[in-house]
Image (cartoon, rainbow, N blue to C red):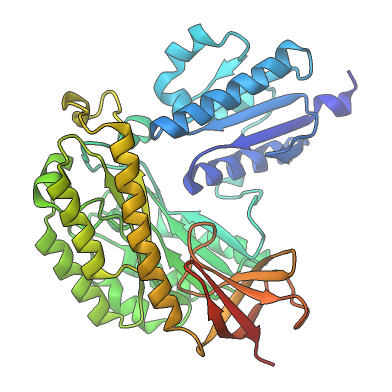
Length: 434
């Protein structure tokens, strides 16, 4: 095997955007050690590192299937080393080691230095915050903290990621400035719990201060907020969102449910009245804001009446964007002591009913945008369309704006002004305004 072959590393990322940031940091470290880096590649490589997800059943199964796929390649002699890291490995390495023998090494979510040492690479502390982006260069995720100190009954994230740990403002500004200097125009702020930011190191919530300082970085035209916990929401960020043109009028708040009994069983420390009041305050403070949420159906004990409460809440609220998960019975969570008594087909039926409702809501909201001119960031070109987003949409999970390639030539990563001409449930069609 040639030395050039031995230098090839393929990093496979599964799961959420927070995992993606971890992979990008890993790849930057490998690059500094002169490895030839690939990401989610089908090409041959000597070393495969799988960054796994262990959040819910489907994600765990995808991670296991991926490990088995590459273990089969290793068994056939088509790669030299197979390494597994990330959330699934953090949580179940002991069990998996006995089941999957072809994996050479297992590492947890905080084991980057040990992983690098295992493959004879140096961990370079001076690269703290630097990443090899796997997203298009014009947008990047900025992880402002790690872990979560909440105690939601259904969630295993604290088991895999530990308690909340904020990065300092200085580190985040340095990382953001570095990204901007390389052409990043949109920062998507992520964390397991965004609004808790600063409480651990500054003894008070500091998201408002962080936003003001990030908004002052030259070249950053959009800042987007993801994963804001509704209980004790820091209302002082709302005037900041309203004040700065480069902070998107967009907020992702996973409410999870709306029935009070279900919320109590979920240990969400909230109720429907509090949620409705918060939404009212947000929309009053930032009138044009797009609200995204996530709902969880099929939680233990969820009755048809409780689910109907959720449907009514979504219908009354009219969220701009909504995603839905079915409950996954996760060992070592407090909900694991409850009986997982909602059958899988019923969970899936409820998820489909909720998304059908959201589809109607989305279509009506999209129709209201016909004739509107929006600032659009062009993400990619597919077939006959350039595909972009407005400030009201996050990549991969939200609506997209399609502009015909026959109308004009657009560059990926550019902002354009575009007039909405037609819509569907989750897409808008537009023409560039010259």
